[in-house]
Image 1 (cartoon, rainbow, N blue to C red):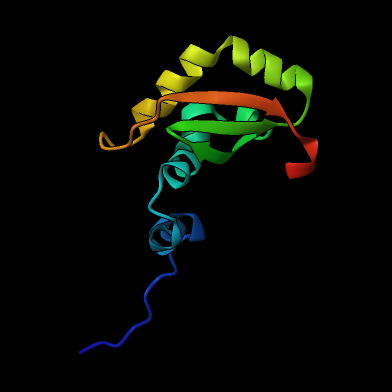
Image 2 (cartoon, one colour):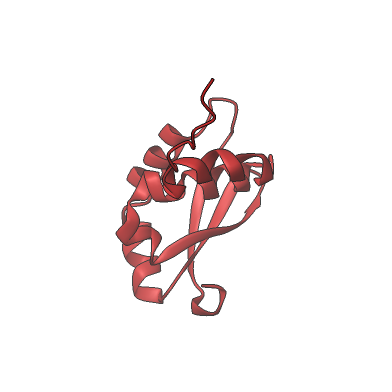
Length: 103
């Protein structure tokens, strides 16, 4: 019987399973968890979901320019985010606002 050491796993492989139970079971939590995969790292670095009310998630953007640009793509962004969410989540819309302080 060998009690050899196991090879270490990369942290990137272990982290999602470790933090999944910590995420709040809310629409906002689901959108936050899916955001980067849905919109890409470049956009996720400029904007992040910060609040939710009645199925509409507010996304804080680094600047008014980013808020405007993302808003122009609003329908596409909404569909991409919806595609990453569980079917049970009822995301009605996204609202974009400039809020550099919340980043």
